[in-house]
Length: 357
Image (cartoon, rainbow, N blue to C red; front, side, top):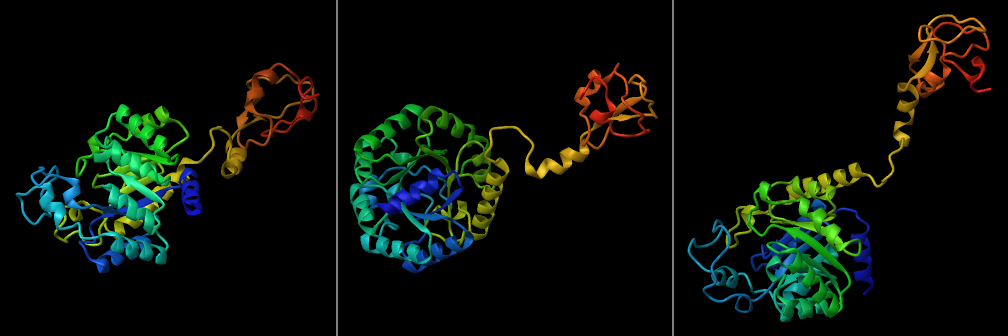
């Protein structure tokens, strides 16, 4: 369980964590699976996630599709038709995917869609399960996954806050206390004006600091993950393939490729760096020189004799800011000079009678 704790510590750190969602884009080929893993790791992804199911346990034979048919073998067909020719991987194949992830130093994850998949993923050494949005109300599956006491990433597409609250409660009662709540829109692909990233902050405010927050992103842009960080996410997953022209799966054409993964990770890191970590507004170390020389000080506008009264005609405010602050200007007016002062000179406390003495 130490690996689970280490991964949870990383997720709780707030650092950007990108998951390349490969799903079943291996198309039943371990050779393609290895390429997906290797290129995701090389592109900078922190994890790669697969999907683990048998069509017969997932849907009825006539369950309608809910996605665009592009990329499917046939325009007409059911969910069962789509899933049944991509469900050949079992425990042995997932064990090999896990081994290859270890070899390429990338976290292995998967979404189980039934108890059997949950069990064999546990046996192959998974540290984090993903619950698909479609199963947020599947309490029997949630109980079984939660009983493994691993990290659970809960996708929330098409869910209400009550659905999420109930799912979290079921998972916790079953035994897990490490949950990543991931905002999602279940439409494939999601139009940018439908992603509603503000909900990330709302979910975070609702559930508090105990959990980690993320985004399961189905938009077609590479910028969305970076935007989500500003609103409180640090874990982001996005559908991923090595070749958008591959057939047999509707996922390829709407997925990001390795080059886009690299750009997503770069933008997430940039967004994280730009956000900073301080809630206090103060001069930063990088601003110190600019503050010193761009701010102003009280200066003489003409030569001033000892005993002469300071007025708005003989003193003003100019750069640099290494002298007396202009905040003191009104208090200096009406006082007298303690000594002769040259023109265009920054006042010091030695130049003042009442103030600074």
